Length: 353
Image (cartoon, rainbow, N blue to C red; front, side, top):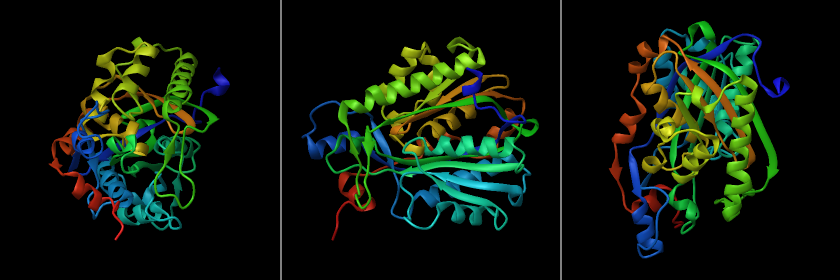
């Protein structure tokens, strides 16, 4: 099992973290009013919607600035990699990462690139940042997961496909607010969700998206990581799982042996929806906002296609001093303006004129 564990050559951790969630909220009941006459259950209460002047670039910049604020005196010029994971980059050919790097002052001597792997593109970028810093190629690397996800009008995804993101500055363990104990990935070729070139909206395989996609990959990745580290669910104070809706992370937590109170702090789907590449990473920011030194956190993402990244972290004494340097994730969630379906359609460009 040791060969499956991804460990860095030198200890690394999270130096700063930050989230950004747009203020607009579309109630799920409003989607149901339009498409089902208000009948049936909804998978979430409401979701966050990007405004007409927001996209993955602006979300990434806001989240990254919060991460740098928490990092304190880190000079952006020392960041040697800036990576953005998303499935809704605003350009088909032009990187999001170069715009972000320029905005935070990390250019010109920086490695920049965009990452894609559906909803785990953010943790994919995070794992790469851990390896980049852990190998000694650079002292700091910035990883972001952000999306302004789209759902076909009337599709089940329209209830949950939301906007938001999170950023993590990775650096040496001695400067970290949370040290990474190890990570592991589990992937297979599972066509549960896809979007072909030139298609505006994704397609999905219905019940196939749950099993053998979501549940299989998350449980395999989590169990393999805990086995490799010699840990059990009881060793963790918090666990954060990808949140396509409210029921899936609750179910997978129960299957793995985690208690409801272990996932509660990072379970945000009911109030902001599924932020795709930002989903598990935004959940982790909410956990870090309230964590105390010496607490252990399990993070497990999921990306359709399909795969999961599992990461084990332990907080340090530095976390208490850095939490208040930037807005808390719950502050963004509480800052909300409700919109109706018509305004949502206008904001997200669903009505072609």
